Amino acid sequence: MKTWLLPALCGFGTGILSAWGIGGGTLLLLCMTLFLGVDQQSAQGINLLYFLPTAGASLFFHRKNGYLEKDVLKCAIPLGTLCALAAAWVATSVDITLFRKPFGLFLLYAGVSMLLKKEGNP
Image (tube, rainbow, N blue to C red):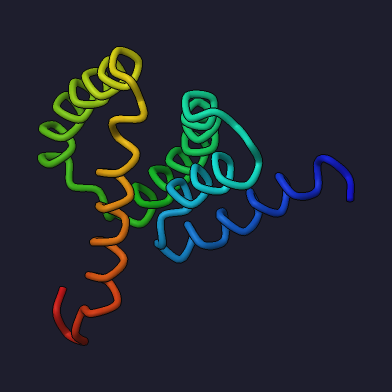
């Protein structure tokens, strides 16, 4: 198997899953760290590069279809930027192994919550 085929398939598969709203970025992180041997910080950087064009396209189409609320954006953009900067600082300042188990527990909780969600409940 070519060395590029498995990473390409992981990117393609997680891209399709993210289009369905499953959280392809998280899956991409897991694929890179568990199956492709990429270290955590490199995987986060690659995931960011994966996310930016996806988010840009989503923003463009949501704006085009009238799904953006300008009042919400005025609050969300500054707060989201501050939180992203704080999280980036924490991620580079703290031993990353501290976050592995809590993040895994969070993913399990989120997955079980999705599975047990009743029809009609938002």
